[in-house]
Length: 380
Image (cartoon, rainbow, N blue to C red; front, side):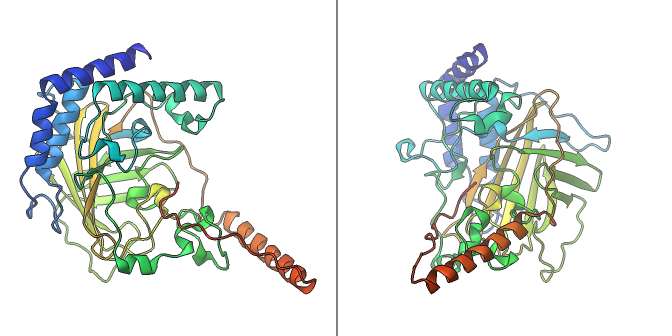
């Protein structure tokens, strides 16, 4: 374990001794949702976000009195290049052994830090079983103590889907990560087609391309995502919402400042995107609302969470927290993926070749079944 990770483990132990129990209690006892904190009966509120902010600040030993820089017009500055690479080692859904515990112990954190260090070593040597995390060689060295990215409900697990959502499940939700059939472009995800990964898929950490950039104007906050080419323009000047009859892949976002926290509420989604890694998995409904919180706690750390409220798809709202970091010199790189690339065409043509081969086999009395379609809904 490096000196950095020993220090992180020590910081975790000190934080747990000095403040973590009190902060965990604050998370559990924060006031219920109201019209100023979240919507749709979600258990996650602005107060709970702020308790999480305090917890991570204590863990990182960042001064509570630290104030974010200000834009020339007085808003807290979130500007910069950010990445979710530092939570690669945090599972999305909480392993059962942690129960309702949101944070690792110092011993558990040391174990995770050692695993993260081994990933960096493997990546540097371009060898071993974990080189898919090669970006982490230069993109951040903070090992966060969350037991899961899902922080609400209290068990840290994505809620079950509704019977209606089960009836909507289809092979196309897996796209090229599944086994088809591939008959039209509609059998592919929007990620396959280099159109979008959606808001959540654009932030959840995957093998590479986890950066995003935030720039601000007096009227808007602009968020660009490294993979594919999504950019969200979020008005913060009270601009009226679009008509509900105007759905968009990234929805219709409106932001407001609550102290140093940016709160964004997004509606008007289509039912064509998903909330899994890379935007894959079971598709949400057009009635989903997402509530996001952004609070900068240091020059290089931004605490971010997002609550998904979709009663047509999930039995209750749930919240994913993704602390973002900004390593020295980090920036977005070009991502050469576009709507007219050849992947979809090649898969479709290969499927037609397979169809002809099956027909020829059948003429000779050879019945060769296709491979079964897998049922996974959340895949990278």
